[in-house]
Length: 215
Image (cartoon, rainbow, N blue to C red; front, side):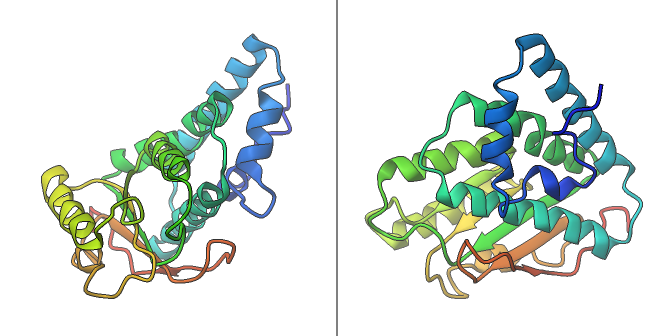
């Protein structure tokens, strides 16, 4: 059986422009339980195999992953509600992607100086944290802290504690010094590093040169 949600390209599962995460998760939830489970399992396996078998250049691989993570970021920024439908969809798409990258010895670091400004409801931060954790990322932010310096110290300490892990670091209007933990690992083997200075609605981001873990 051919399902309209089985995409040919990885980015299509996360495409922020077409609201893929929101739209697909809601449509798949309408399927009969057995059909839904079968579809999500097929998608999960397909994404896992795609990442494990990818044979493109490091630049192509980095661009592939960066586009997906950037679209996830753009999606997370606008979510005002997050249900088990989105959770199930991310568990079958984003999480297998990140698990497969981990099997290949690859860690993803995504940093942004834009996103949720002060004054956004606390619930938005909680949604973003749950969203990124479900995708397979630690989520670091300075918005929910009353003191920015405390947030930065906590972030730096946590990074040392957890070691090599994929994360999203959000420091609105952050400067280069504040992003030092991110820049310190740029160029390290096995780490894909992306930086976004543009607003979430903008589809662009910066990808740093990637050196595979087995290079």
